[in-house]
Image (tube, rainbow, N blue to C red; front, side, top):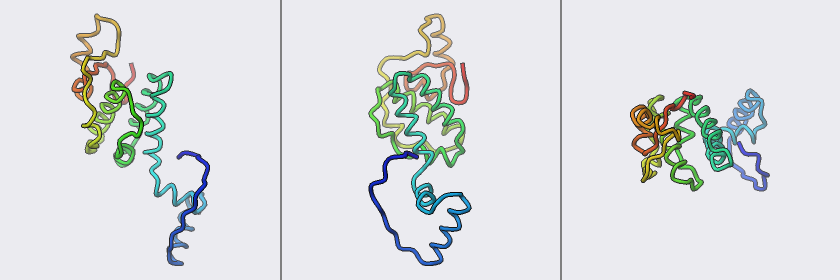
Length: 164
């Protein structure tokens, strides 16, 4: 989770039994009560997903996409559902938006998770984008790209969980 400065406070009303139960659970988790409640309320997988998406806008998007690949590959079905539930808040260039949406679609298919609605709102690229500049590889990429990438006019050789 992000380590932003905490400048606000929130209070909730609980019974004495509920407070004791939260204290015990926080103690078992090795956290103070505030950290425990925040971890339960705010999605850690969604935060990790968001950080990876933001990194894709940096100077080395290929490395950030590889990191996102690793993250999505490591999620359980429940974590994946939690991570991808909300549309990324950043405005992404069309290529990155399609690449990330396709990666999410592949991860969902692999884990048997329903696709988030936001992936369907990402318009496919108008022109094809290839994972290699080598013209001799284009036929291979056209025929071997995973379906979610092909639908988006992105042609690559490896997909989620694989490395080239």
